[in-house]
Length: 305
Image (tube, rainbow, N blue to C red; front, side, top):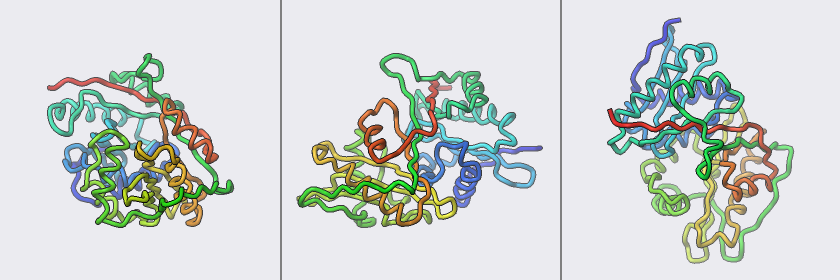
């Protein structure tokens, strides 16, 4: 089978990318939340995207250097992965070296892989990536968690004076971005990125949950995603400003988001979290999320060409 790499050409390519991930959802960490990830500013430069097509002009693989996440996202059709996966990693290697001194670059990039994907792990290690599960103080690993629609969602009411509601559209995006940056202590979230998520066809305004404080500030958020075909839901992202954490507003926002996903008919709801973030992990466990996949984090350091 002849496979040729083509440049990213239009927004239509993003929908092909999401469709390929959904076709093999069990092999990919990110599926339902791709409208969020594929709206990131890393994709403002088409050269950060690699697309591979077969002789029938069908997309069989893609990769993105996701600068805001410090991660290399990629999806590959299982029928061609054996031969194509090393090529994808080689492309990512070249691109990472080329952009290291630009706003899109990092000196370190990460790849997430399910612990059962032994062939991918072999290729990653051969390409110079190293597992971060046991490297001392900076060790890192993740899990994919799932809860069933059969399990009732616990109800948590907001404290007196706080209001749980959907984001008020574009007029509130700047306030959201300020909150997001404060929660994650990074400036990676941008107004343009957030506005793009609002315009994505898969975006559902009623699933974009925020908690407003008595003085009118945004205090917490929980964005949920829902796929009407697979009936899968996803929580991404969730956060609460440090000034309001004593009120457990993250729990309040998550409860609201899960109830709304349930009302849409979500059969399964997924969330990804780092295993070293015990607070987040315990929060999801308290809402009956269970670990279904162990996720290994692989790292590679890069230098400029």
